[in-house]
Amino acid sequence: MFNDRLFIVFDFFKNYTKDLIWLKELPYLAGDGYYFENGGKLSNIGFEISSSVKIINRNLVKCEIGANIGSYKNKVVSLAGEPIITNLFNGEIISMEGKPAALFYGYKTNGIFKTEDEAEMESLKVIDKNGNERLLHAGDIKFVDINGDRIINENDKQIIGDPNPDFYGSFYTNIVFKRITINFLFNYSYGNDIYNYIRSELESGGSGSFIINQSTAMLSRWYYDGQNTNQPKIVYGDPVGNSRFSDRWIEDGSFIKLKSLTINYDLPWKNNIIRGINLWISLNNLFTI
Image 1 (cartoon, one colour):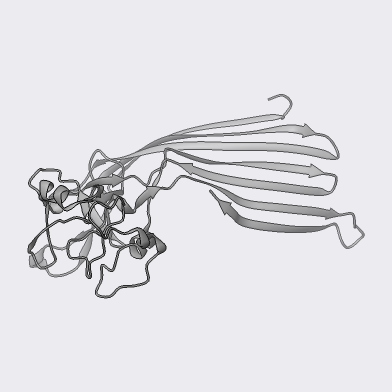
Image 2: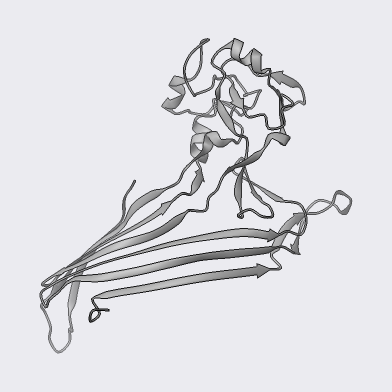
């Protein structure tokens, strides 16, 4: 529009996929291993809008800005059996009918028990690695008990995050002044959750057989009755599973990134052999907010 000064593109898509390929575990009687199976249906619906405008369009000076934004929603329409749970870096993702694919699946938390009286009032128990029941005490994570049986186990797992963004996109600026061209490119995402695996290791408090280096966040860990903190106490081996996969490690993954900055200079040098020379420098991933 306006003699090529304004450019707009709108894309809408609706995609339906069937006979998805799943990696499934063999039944116990068939032996150890996995096999591929066709089954399941997935739907995707979304849009993307792109636009650019030439603010200045003269011989020696040009300035163009552009942007695009997109959004999609996917849904598992059907599965060839039970929900599919995949283990990944000590965490779990789940795909189930009626929900988006690959959601984070684990325990929800509600802070920590700051006093022993608070812990005794709840009387929550966990099942340790040896199958024994253990009471949660002051300084332990207060896990959400879904079914009200006061035992934190597999039955209390739920969806704790969605890696799919609400919307995503990019925007750029292209400036030309005589023989110099400067280009900025930003991209962004909003509304997606991420699993911070690195933090789950550095704030685990020694959940393995030996204690690895921990971050300075552990300096605020609980160590006296009534302390107001969100960092649980440290107990060797983590017998009650305070560091288990939970929404403690799920974070807002929204970001804006300066993806690239490019500066180009067109040398005024031409002859019968050389048609032109461009000198340029490009910087990638300069910063992320």
